[in-house]
Image 1 (cartoon, rainbow, N blue to C red):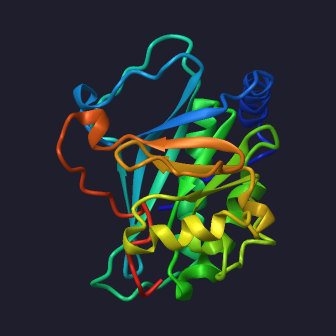
Image 2: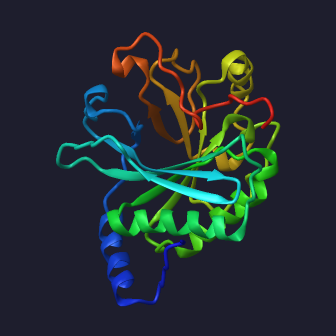
Length: 251
C-alpha cells in the first residue's frame, strides 16, 4: 500500500526544516556508491568523500511493487555526509504495468527515505527502457513535487541519454548522473564522443565511473560518483548489478 504523505502536516514541516539545516553544508565533490554488500567488502570513505548508500531496492513485477530494505548493515564513520539511494528494477519475466499506483508507491518510498534520513540529496537509480520512459518521467515529477524544497533529487542515467539518445531536457531532477562504466565494446566510442564535449546540458553537472575499470582518459564534467567494484573488494571480477551501465541493447 502506498505511504501517505501530507506536506502540510507539522511533522513534515519540521522534517523539512531539519533537512534545510543539513542542506546548508557544502556537498562533497566526490561520492562513493555503496551497493548492498557486506561492510567487510566496502572501503571507508576517504577524506571529503560522501557516501551514496543503497538503502532500498524496489522491484516492479507486472502490476506489483516489492520494496526490500538494505540487507547488509553499513556503519560509516562520524562526519561522513551520506545520502540514500533507491534502486529500481523491472521484472523482465512479467509485462510491466506502469500504473499510477506503482508510480505513487515509488514516490512515497523515495520521499519516506528522504524524510527519515534528512539528507541534502536523495538519489533514484532506475534505468528505464524506452517503453518505460513516460512512467519514469512521471515518477520523477511526482517525487520532486513531494520532496521538501531543501532536498535535491538526483537520478542516474545511461551514458547514451547524453549523446544521440537525448530525452532528458525537461526532466524535473536537480541532478542527472550519467554512468560511464560497464559500457562494454561501446566504451571507446563514448570516449571519442566525449572528447567533443557532452552535448546534453543536463548531463554536465555530474558523472559516474567505476574504480575497477581504466580511468576515463578525458575530464568529465561535474560532481564525481564512483562505483566500488573489484578494486575495492579485492575480487578479480565484480559482476555489475542491474542498473549499472549500458547492458541492454533493447534500451
